[in-house]
Length: 358
Image (cartoon, rainbow, N blue to C red; front, side):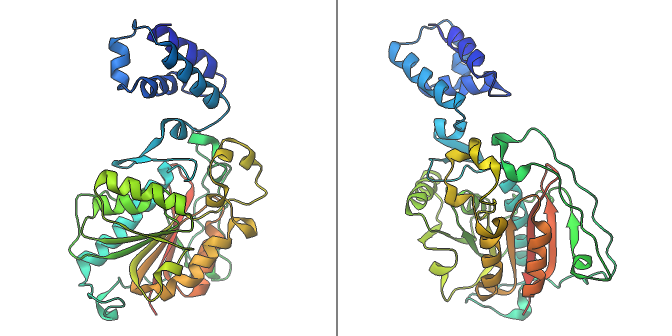
């Protein structure tokens, strides 16, 4: 079988399962042959060896069964990085890149506007930003609708976002909504080395992206899974990035320390969600599912984060499209200022944040 025939054959096999089968089979065959995809075009009449054809057919079978392309290839792009991924880690998604954008934005504001103290805790007068005054009668945010065409049929990206109603100056009236991505400031390394903690790092995507784009910041990342940490450390070595990876649940490895930014993409899918039987069944369940309708880990992080934030520090959390209201309420009740949720580039509420000013 020639390369051109293999590509056509693969596309026919995957057409019922994949909206872009041609792109998928090019990636698979290039992976089998250990060649760039451009090489396939220039050598489309080259015959495959029996071994290469057998490996290609095996990958097509796994792909047709729903296994994510990232696991078949062993890597996934994330911002400026190419990250190794295995079934031990969640596949980094475009929505999480938006969490990194917001973290960089908040960190740059802290670094540029104030002089951070060298010791954990720091000088409260020099850290953070003055929270904006909460409006007493904030309008209800616009109703956001589902954007189609998302990868991997991720259930947290489906459906419609709930509207928020501010009643009699209730907590909801205090929250602000910001749609779209923040201004791109990736080239500005900031003026002060900040301390950043990434909780539940998985492949290391968030921690490594932040470190690669803000090399002077001191980044620490935790995970309960030793196998996930092994993947993250391998990614760090591959990119020459110095991140302090620690084993343990959420804040446990950070005892006695404080940070300017705490970021996390924790499990947030309801255990009863029917989509867990879909494509995401190949991903580690522990990185996807949380009790209490998917809110247990989000609430745990919110409740304990103040003990690990410097005055003026920020907590930023990725969550499901329908969880912004619950997460913002919890942030507000815990005493965070400047509580807000942000829509991802697909139009879904995706990240909530708050600033700690004791």
